[in-house]
Structure formats: structure tokens, C-alpha cells
Length: 90
Image (cartoon, rainbow, N blue to C red; front, top):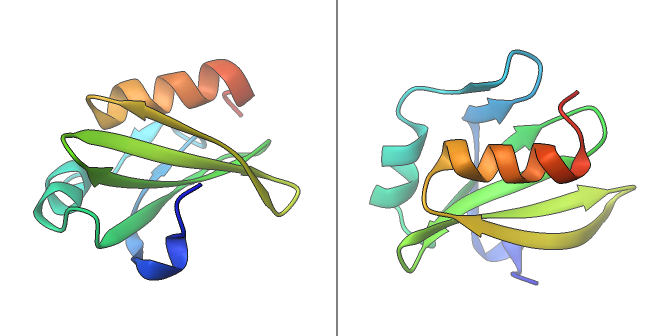
């Protein structure tokens, strides 16, 4: 699993299951800061941390204060759908 402590965490830009939203500018910001920053995917049944590296978006999914899986996709929308399909849309 990727060590997220090596990345700067952005609190202002994120993804949320509350209204199934991805903040405007998040995808571009992650690409511009490739491999250096991450943002949160807030959900009821899990928490994810997303970043961009090597041409893909990644999400490290956490449950019960532990990382359990990393998934990847070409876009943030696709990444959000993959995480939600497996861990829940709430």
C-alpha cells in the first residue's frame, strides 16, 4: 500500500458520497501535483484517499481506521463509481 504520509493532504478539495460530488478543479489539481498530494473521498461506510500517479487516479480505501485496498481508474468519476460499487454509495 502507498505510504500516504509522503503526500500533502488537501482539505479544501474532495469527493463526497453525501451528494455524489467531485469538487470542481480536483482532477486537474491532482494531475498538476502528480504523486505529491492526495484528497479525501468521504463516505458513510468507508473513507478513501485519492491521488494521481503514472497516468491513473488511485484511491486507498479505509475501513475501521485501516487501509484495506487500493483501486485505480482513468478518471475520478470512474474511481468514485468503482469504490462505491464495492463499498457502498452512502
